[in-house]
Image 1 (cartoon, rainbow, N blue to C red):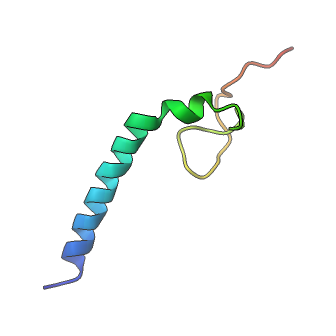
Image 2 (cartoon, rainbow, N blue to C red):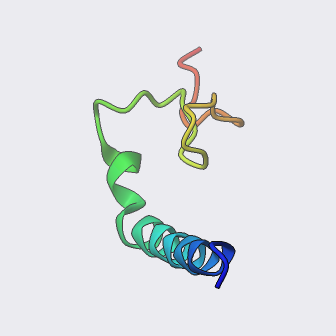
Length: 58
C-alpha cells in the first residue's frame, strides 16, 4: 500500500468540504463590515478585488 492513496482520498475530501463551506458560508464575508471591501472574496490570499467591490464616491 502506498501513501499516495490515502493522501489523495484526503485531498479529494478536503476539496469537497471546501466547496461545501464556500457554498454554505460565502455570503458571510460579503456582508462583514470588518472585511476590507478592497479585498477579493474569490481567493484566500487577500488579493485586491478586481473590479473593485465598491464604487468610488467621486
